Image (cartoon, rainbow, N blue to C red):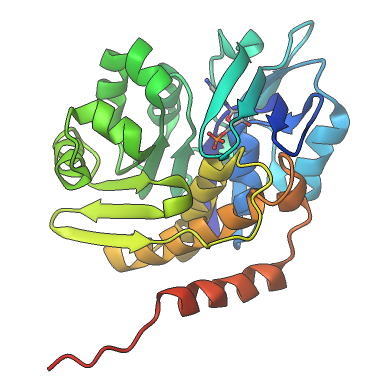
Length: 308
Ligand code: AMP
């Protein structure tokens, strides 16, 4: 079985959408990535940190799904990372109302011994030095290192980010961030420039408009499934990343062709994530639902044109 090592926040989230709001609920990029990866035949572990205010029942939700949490440090007397966001009416944009790093502020990740030989490493959106700290602990070069980042790190830790992306294979970012990173409006030019910085594969996420995969002169596009209702987009990007990484860890095939399927799996899982608040939908997702929707993806994109 493939081994997937995940680093990412394990958090309390509070979410406000036009349809309602939550108190503090389970969230964090590491959690969304881990839950998505449970849809594949992989052993996975999350490296993260929480305070002792984090309920055991939340940790149990992860262990019940056979996610290894031995790399989640619990800091005595510490407070768990807290994020609060409010979505605008179109659900395409949101304001971050609160980011309390708490225990994440001085987090020094420790990779569990039995994951130092992981096939795939998924570096969730965190300080680039934490991401580098994980890479440095790997016994041998993983088959694939995937990194997710955001404008916050581009603005505040640019030099560190440039260093870490020299060591990775795939970067996942959204369209605005790709433009910010390169100063290019064209996503094709932006992807070229990012490849020059290190990652051989660039995945550009475009929210409800799908995702693009770039590698040298090859481009692939996966749509997002048009949904009747989107309830809460929180974690969609991380769920996408977890599906992408989970599929590649299961198949251990990291060709461009295989990455195309990985993008479809990522988009498919993200389409479930947005149907309920926070992790609720992903915690109750069944394999047969996933398969059924994959078929919808296929139908959405298949056509027969006779080329003369
Ligand atoms: P997404 O909607 O895919 O961008 O991910 C949202 C998740 O990322 C939430 O569950 C948050 O807890 C987490 N998150 C938000 N900001 C940060 C940050 N600066 N560092 C780490 N995790 C974050």
